[in-house]
Image (cartoon, rainbow over all chains, first blue to last red; front, side, top):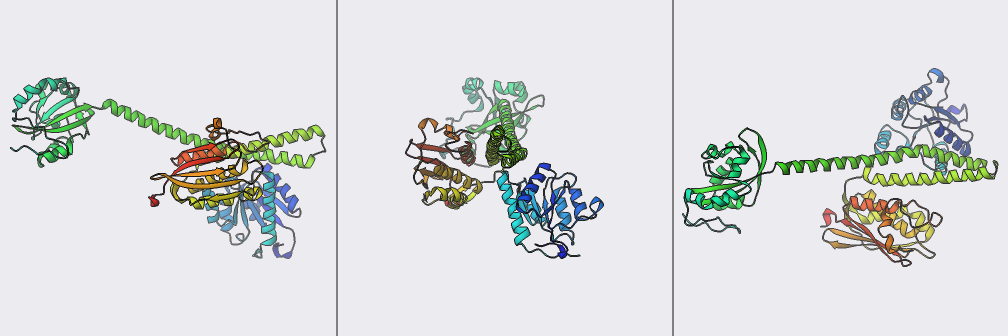
Length: 151
Length: 386
């Protein structure tokens, strides 16, 4: 497992999504495939940035190993959050996976243009959603080698 | 003066022996006044030398006020210029140029108001030189009707576009809350089956089934509205490649059914390639799906129907369709089978029809119950292959 500096083997995932239903579904799916992962939730773009920059109430937030980012968010849009993270030398190595219902080509291009690590559509069916979460865990948290954290 | 030669099927009306203006007018006065159009006769200097009653009425002048006056008084632009230009050419040229070709200009009434006119010019040789007869028709009403029609067409197009967008957005946005309903009823079913009593299991099963069906309907509605709302321009497209991509997408169904799929040479056509893939996918998918026991056989081919048009055929050895349903199966949400026989929402062929029609073609079926079906659709040739 690629976790920061060996201080802990816990995997921290930041889920940025404003829908409680989606958050719970994601939580349930992770429980099935990787119960040990710690899922942190930010319900809007501003909170997401506070979390990754460890400001305000999130001063003690852990550095996420993986970020799952929805696009339609209150306050600060997903693409703005993405641009901020990928524009920050300390944060840009964190894989950011866009996880959204939007299948718009414009959104897909914009996100890759802002260096999103991949763009995924939320599947409509429950089984497909669970399979997708399984694939994310398998690929990004198991198979992929991620760089050590810059301190 | 020599008698002009006939040119390209038209003849200068020769009034032999060349009549003088007064004689000419005398002889044709009755005809002139009875004409439904305004008629003015103009000389090479652009002066009005004869006019009829309709011309007086249309332009609001008394005859005496116009005779000898410049035609630019009543047709400010486009007419006198033409006279001048034609004056530099031979009568034959002028004739060949002008006869039978209506020119749309503006007329000016005595009160200064303008109105749209169509004029037909014809040169007329007389002892006083070449004259030009102009038959002038007020086309205000026609213009008004045209403008009205154009506006209606435009409005219709806009409202159609809006409707397509509406259907697209509605079906897209409806998926969101529905995803919650289906996902959570499925979670309920999975986690609490057998723990809440038989009634609860039934209720949950109905809820899951309803939500799943609705999800499929909305998904298909979205696919249907996407054909219009997310269309790409038609361009040169290999139907062979589109067909192969459709087969790749159908890989699961083909492997599962053991279907034998063959094809003849498939041409280049004018198409939106994504939609062409979907068209093949839906038709071949149906051919595999609506089968009794046995190996499904599907043959896809194309032949030139008429210059510029290809007829594609997707032939199968499946269940076949009764004649009375040939039209109906292309309608939205139209099904011929119960859900327990064949799953589906009845949108696949409606999508096919919409795609083909968007491409300027037609789609139809020939079939006999128990003997398979042949779906045929027409597409335009690619610009390169003509």
